[in-house]
Length: 91
Image 1: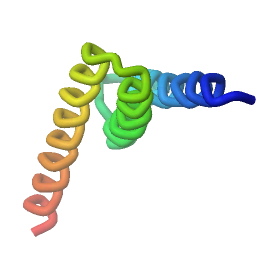
Image 2: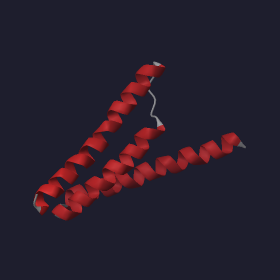
Image 3: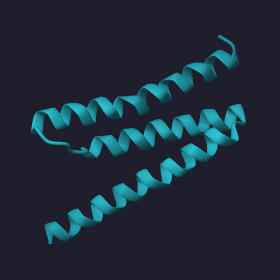
């Protein structure tokens, strides 16, 4: 397998990871019978986005790079807010 095929496979793994977050969110919402965003959604967002960012950098695609960098910031910020609230609630 050549380098290009490995990168394409890597990109697909990132896309599958990133896309799976919607399945997780949908299943969690169906289970609770209300719209919720589980913690796994944010971790899948970060993992998928980091892989896709690596792929975008390899492809030298500035539009894709900007989009993934912006998303990563938002996903990390959401996790920070969630963990901060949990600390306050546990106190």
